[in-house]
Structure formats: C-alpha cells, structure tokens
Length: 264
Image 1: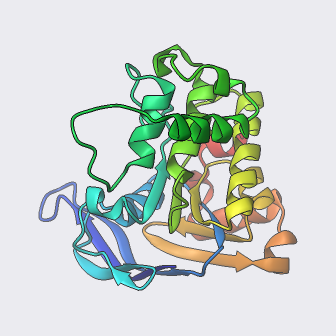
Image 2 (image 1 turned 180 degrees about the vertical axis):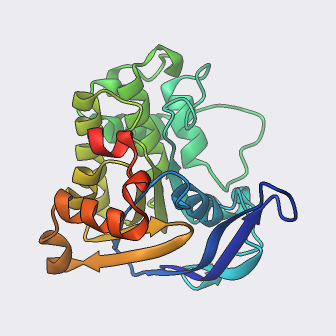
C-alpha cells in the first residue's frame, strides 16, 4: 500500500548547516499495517512523513501508494490517496467555517465544488451519522464554528475529516501530543476504532513510547536518518519501554533520549 525505496534528502546542501536528513530509507507497508514510528529529535520521523505527504520531495528515491508512483506529485495531488492529522489541532480544520462546512471540504476533496456551499439534506444526514460515532455530541452542533470547539473536539473532527473517504494511507503526525493526557487517550481510542473499522494502512509518528508499543501491529525506530529497528507481531508485543530505552542508548548514547520521550 505504501512503498518507499532508497529515499534520500539533504537540507541546506553545501552550507555549514548541511543536514542529510534521510539516508536511503526503505519502507514497505502492506494493506492494513498500523505502524508506529519513534525516534529522538532530528531522527527523520517528520521528514519521512512530509516526504510521503508530498510537502517535501526527496533528492533521490521512489514513493509509491497502492502501486502508483507519486514521487513527483505535489501534496494536493496526493490528497486523493492520503489522509493526514497534524500535531496542532488547528492545522487540519478551518476555524471560521462551520463543522458541516469543514466536513464538506473533506468529503468533496478531489471533486469539482463550484462556487456554492449548498449542503444537501442527505449529505447533512451522513455528516451527522459520522459525527455521532465520535461520541462527543458534535452531531448536534453542525452549524457551530469550528473555532468554538475544544482542542480535543477539534482534533477528533480532524481525524474524522482525514478518514471520511477511507484514504489509502493515513498519516498521523504526533496527533495527540498537544492534548492533555485524558483528551489524548480519548483521541487515540477514536483513532484505533476508526483504523480498525476500515482496516486503514496507517503511519503514526509519536514520542510516546508506551503508545507506540500499545498501538498498531508494527513499530519502527529511527535514528540519524536511518531505520534502525523494525518489529511486528509477537516480537513487537514482547517489547517493553525499558527495551526501547536500551535500544536508543545503544544507537546513539543517552543524549538521543529527549526529556519529552522519557516523561511520556
């Protein structure tokens, strides 16, 4: 479903701050894989996600989604294949538009929208039913501006918008990191519910090692632009946080473990 072959990218080449951010990344996700991605600051996690999303282009390598070579596609052209939820709850929604208008944007992605914003009765019923599955009462607030929602409600809406058309690949970029622990747990539960229901192929970047171990069927660890660990199934289920800490220490010393990772 997602295939990265020999992906290299260097930032600011030929300057004193040159950074070889990804060093020949090879990664293949099969249909229904739910992969959690961990790594220290600067490991290349977000860069890899941006490469997949099309907001960055690799210097060399090939990116395929569902056997379609999308390497040269910009982000708006890849939107027909991908859904993405960002760390900032404000990034995936339009604050000055209503809940139903935000959902209409997501639902009509890739279609000709015209100049009007007429939402038909059947369409509104569909949005209401989808919102009800979140269990947050948003199905009664279709006309409310999204800017009035809490961070957790807004992130749940972003998740629903990203998965409304069942994307080939779902990208989660630390999508619970900006939320308080209770709200983060709620959004993560909703994520698992949606991913499992539709068997979505998912790539989830996180700093939270417990969440990385608890969720998904596969875990990869990145360090210095490389994938240094790739485990799934029973091998993954037997891992502990202490195991991961020891692997980080072996990979690059204790300094690769940020306070943020240890505290979460």
